[in-house]
Length: 150
Image (cartoon, rainbow, N blue to C red; front, side, top):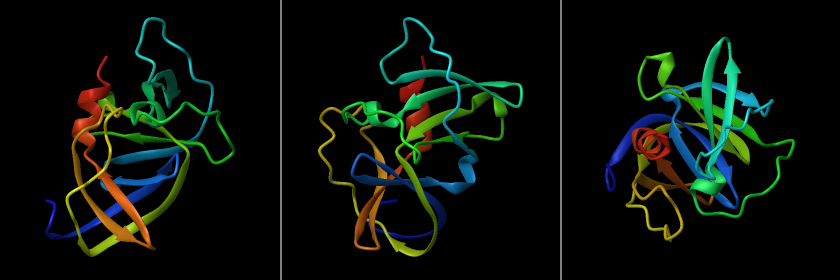
């Protein structure tokens, strides 16, 4: 995907001082942070579980997964609920610092992602593009789900 032009719709968000995006078609909900039930003996990035319309959804902290210091929840903190496919059972909540905007990817020119991913559990990105003078890294939802499986 990197190095080519892409027409797609992306949801952008901030984690620490970095901007990321993912395929908006994989997003089911954007929620305020609610009561998250902690699950013992899970990795540090696993915040816990939420009840979403009767479905149990695991929530991961992207800040921790990306190797940033774990910071407290603010008014801008949100949970983006994504699904890699059409099945609601595979939902995953992503805690992010701030949801930014939907980007209509008209002829986005993707470049290979160059980032220091030494502490990050996510190693593969679909590419990076420049938007409003910010580099935005596109997260591969399938990779994210695979890394988050516990």
